[in-house]
Image (cartoon, rainbow, N blue to C red; front, side):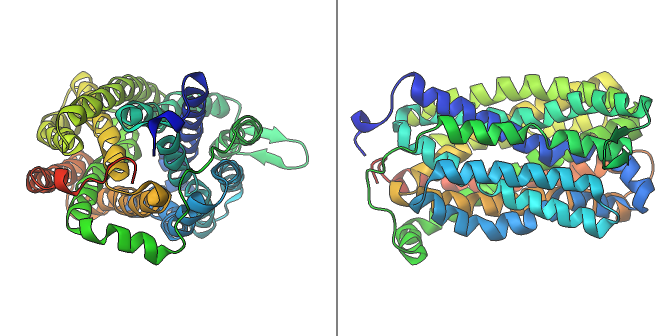
Length: 432
């Protein structure tokens, strides 16, 4: 695609910022459940494994199944309409969580949240790749990704305070609907921001012209990736390793501080929210800049950034998971989230660089479905399983998290080392 035909100036950045806001709201709805593990445990008699499944596994069931058709729709239909419809669905599904009467009904509502959120990343990434040239894509992705990385901090900081306020008033009364316990009211309130956001996105974003013919079939897209499968698959594997860490941290950071450092949920939410927010901003901007800087000099720039992240990850992981002092644990959390955030822009940039323009929505949907299934679907549940079955004592959750983080970092580093000399030759030109 000719760079001169792309959008320029404030219009492109407005869409980017609005997409980032959509991503932020999606993460609010996705991660708010991490604040209410204790009341859910009491309400439904759940263990850590079931809590991990509610947080991740339920969400990814339809998220991954829907990813392929959503990617096809992003390549062939209005991306604006797809995103607006997804926001509406996941917001309503989050509100439905407030009416859950059992583990099964809450699990089903979480499945619907995942279905709605499956629309955003394939369509959003396709939009960004359509309106930005390759040398600016890393920065655009960093702004988009910042919404995702800020969603969990805001959910913890704001949600923790809101939960405390609701607890003081013993929940919330709503005309015609009745009384809602604090955790149920929190779900209702969290689902509200997405409703006006869906309308705003639909009303103010124009679908850009497609400058290439959409792919005619899934087979066409898969055939186009076949020559690079030997490189794309290991790159996706490395991204999955970052996802295992990136999704497990916000899932369990509040319970870890509550259990190992005797903090209240509101205190833990405020502390983790502040730490994650600062780290996400710094890390995402740094990751976008590093990706653009190294990609301008080396064709394997995204792999170099990812490899550096894996190399740096174990030290802050040990601080966060095993420290006996709360200030060291929070410092470790901030550093750990910074490393995770740095790895997000090169991951998305790599997906775009290794795919053709007319197939980017489909390829992104496959990639997002895979790393979400492994990272979000398996990461929190694996931590919960290890906490229930492998370790005991007050540090069992910390040891469970550290075990997963170190194994993920080791595997990711090996994959990046193998990819470094190979990925440059496999890159498609940005024009596809």
